Amino acid sequence: SGAHVKNRPDMQRRARMGQEHWLNEVRRMRGHWEEREECRSNEAFRWQVETCAQLQIKSQHECILRALQLAATDGLITPLPFSQDTDQSFLGWTGFQVQQEQAQEFRRRIESLFPAPLPENTLHTAFRRAGLVPDKWTSGWLGMSPFRFSLQTRQHYR
Image (cartoon, rainbow, N blue to C red; front, side, top):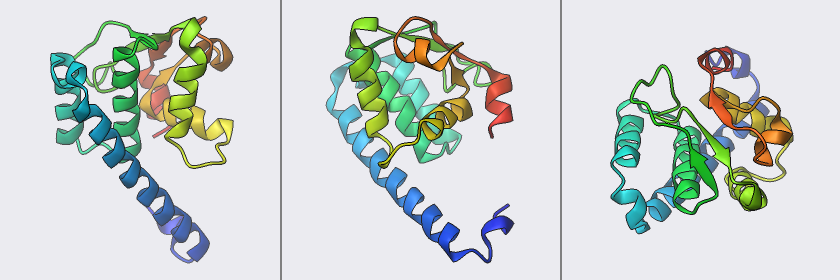
């Protein structure tokens, strides 16, 4: 692992910049999460965050997890039933449905996690790595179909 960047200083620099971005972003998201009583007092959310720490999940995935939790408490999305089986969920999330009237705000919040400019494929790949995918991206973002956990997708994009 990492052999493809060994003699590529440009790739090493970009990787370091990405790591730094996600480290800063996860600190910011943790702060927002801690400010929210609805997050701190939610047993499922606490279990998810604790599991995230135990499994040493990457910062990008922790940011997505906390963004989903905040979006759920704000009514932007509706979670599908949670599961404590981490092989059948993304840290407890089996999926979620974007609320159609909140679709633009949800998408804006998710995009704001990433450095700009954000290629569409980068955004989709982050969700594929988490295993949370809709049937069609456009319909998922617009709230016309749910994002559902797919172990096969997650394993394929690891």
